[in-house]
Amino acid sequence: MAKHTEFGRLGEQLAVDFLLHNRYKILARNYRYLKAEIDIIAQKGNALVVVEVKSRNMGFLEDISNTVNRKKVSLLTLAANQFVQDRDLEVEVRFDIVKVVKNGNGFEIEHLENAFYYF
Image (cartoon, one colour):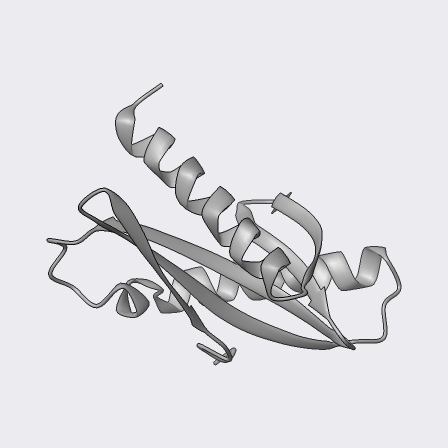
């Protein structure tokens, strides 16, 4: 397995651990619909939280939250709609980003709630 794939999986696991620690319930990981994939689908209260995980090394220059483009948002929305429809859920849907940044031997985790909206 490529190192970037392993690093991405580690980032996703750290994000799951972070969300669990903050009392989110994990409903699905790597949920796929057509060409879309949602890293984590969680629930907190009556909110269904669609989480995009971005893992990077500290030297990465671009703001990680800017790496989620219009196409990615459209795909996440498509998959989230399908998830809600398949399960006949009556919930508010929120789109978050969890940034996992490797800093030396440790990791910094930042949770951006309502990081983007469907446009």
